[in-house]
Image (cartoon, rainbow, N blue to C red; front, side, top):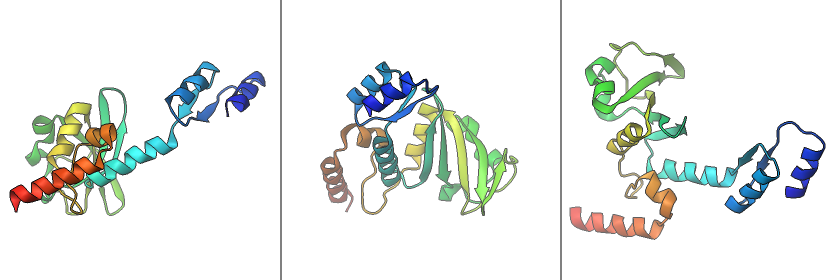
Length: 173
């Protein structure tokens, strides 16, 4: 792939995207002029890990180093309440950009609109605030103790997760 990228650059291809296998490969691709380097396997692995450890988070996208957008399943204790009643911006430091209800995407929902059971929320906020909200709604799912996404991505220590789950069961049962 490196040779192909060099040849394409020499032929004058204006914008080149290439897949890297690891960080060293990405560094080489960048040095030879590749405009964008992608890691589809790594990115999908992180996305899968996130979906396993946070089943209530449907999607998470980093907008910058500071801000994220997250799509979450409506928490049970928010059902029937309005955004005004929940006071999400003040309590959690995030904004609800949209509500998805029955495949109808409502952008800038009215503050007095009651939220319903199967709603999903599109949330925008600073990374720290979004992460705190995600952790607040983290739950046990499929018998696995939920760890933060960072812990799973950093360590991929599934043995440690299982040990923590066993310790949790011992302590609470």
